[in-house]
Every structure is written in structure tokens, then in C-alpha cells.
Length: 386
Image (cartoon, rainbow, N blue to C red; front, side):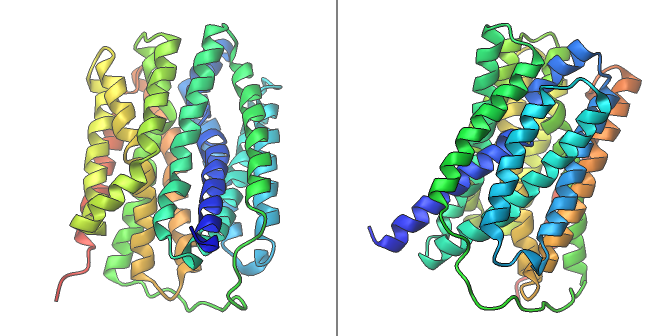
């Protein structure tokens, strides 16, 4: 094994751990902890939706801030600051019961996770590209699924110990602290330099690019309803707390290899068709969570949600970069903005629909319809063969 390959593997592993901490735990541990918070603190579905949206608003603000050129040369420092903040903020969630504090903490946690996402990607991708190992991007993105599975295992243990919701946040912080140390040791330098940051040209908004952007915003709305409320749906359906943890673990385990598997699909079908197909499969998962009773519906939903949403997120960005190759930072910022907008609106809308109707059926079916539209629009945006 060459030194470049071993370095690429080390950075890909560091990226996987960073994504597990900042995204799998930092962003998504709210899902398995939420039912306990709703029950013990008497939060309404609308309250739960506002807390989730505060996190996504923070992510939007952080991603837009991180996409600028000001951070050039400081990527590693800012990435570690984001990981450290994610750890501290998880602990703070377990030390308060005030709605205003929840909103503020989750906003800051979203901002921190965006910094990790953007800056760690620039570090990892530069090192794996230098080694000619872009296939290792799948390891990096797989960290989201790994973090989700780890947080589910943690919740299963806490359930067995009859611990309250606050313990979930405090143990998340402890796991995140371990991840922080690993990443600091493994990712021992920033991205490989390629000269000065160049000024990118303005985006040319042709029909295909607009379609990709709109579809990505719709996907942000469509996936986030189930990603936020899946475990609450299980609780509402009378599932045990151990089963709740199991459903979330299934989602994480399906997510871990999903980017690698979908890359294989995209190699055969093309990027746009793979995006659309993944959306349509996710529709089945979103629908199953509320339409199929017993254990089957939630487990199927966990597999199909986990097995698609991380890959669709990556494919949307890849499609946009294909459409705007000369302005990667600008298109990344714009795609993140519309995706973030969809994520912010989704939990609030779903929370209100659930409060109004008494369950999550209407909210989930709305999300499924939006996902169908997102997949169809993206499919229609594919470049036509000459």
C-alpha cells in the first residue's frame, strides 16, 4: 500500500467519524430522544417541529457562512471547533427543560454540524483525490449511518436502564467527545492546497439547473418529516421503547453502505435516474411508516429511509456540480440553502398537521407526494444524449 493510499484511508476514516458525530449524532439523535421529551416535558408535535427546524435553520446559516472564501487556511481549526461545539451543545440539551433554551441550543448545534460537514469534506476529499481514491467518499458519507446506528444502540442501553430523555443527550455528548479526540488525531492537517482561492463566475441559470435546485429543496422537505418523526410515529403506534431504538438502528445500518451501493446503481443508470429511483423507493418507506401496522411498517420505513436519504443528498450536489462546474462553491451554497429551506419548513408543517389531525398520517403522505415530485423533476433535468 502506498503512503498516499494509507493517508487517504486515514482521512476517509476520520471523515466517517466526524460525520458520525456531527450529523449521525449531532443532528439526528434528536429523533430517538424526541418521544421521551414529548412525553416527559409534555411537548406538542408543533413544539417538536419548531425545535427540529431551529436545528435546520442553524445548519442553513452555518453552511452558507462556511461556503465563503474567508475560511481558507483555517479549515481544520473550524472543523474541530464545530465538533467540539457539537459535543458541548449535546450536553447542554440534557441540562435544561426550557423551550427557548432548546431552540437556541439546537440552532447552534445545526451551525456547528454545518461547519463540520463543509470543512471536513474539503479536507477529506482533497486527500483522497490526491491518492486517486474518490471511491472512499462512500466511507465518509457512511459516517452518517454509523452515527445513527451508534445513537440507536445507546438508546437501547438507556431504555434497558430505564433512563430518562436527558440521559440520551448526556451520553451523546460523551460519545461525541470520544469521536472528537479520534478525529483530532487522525485528521492531522487541513486540505491539500491548490493555490489561491479564485473568484468564481456567476451562476448561469438554465432550465436544467433550475430544475435540479427546485427538486433538491423539495427533497429537503420530503425526507425530513420521517427523519424527524419516525420514532415518534412508532411511539404513537404503541411500539415499545426497545422497538423504537431498533427501528432507528435499522435506519442507521441501512444508511452506512447506502452511498457505496447507490454509486453502483448510478454507474449503470446515470446520476439523475439513480436520484429519481432513490426518491421513489424512499416514498415507499415514508408511506410504510404510517400505512402498514405492527412491526413491519416502521422497520420497512427505517430500511428504506436509511438506505436512500444520504445517497440522494450526495447525488443532488453531484448533479448540481455537473450543471455548474465552473462555480462549485456558489452552487454548493445555493443547493444547501434550498435544501435547508425545505428542511426548515418540513418539521414545522408536519408538526402542525400532526397536531391538527391527531397523528402523522397526513404529514407523511404529504412528504411522500413531495418526494415523488422531486424525483420526477430531477429525472426530467438529465442532460439529453446527442
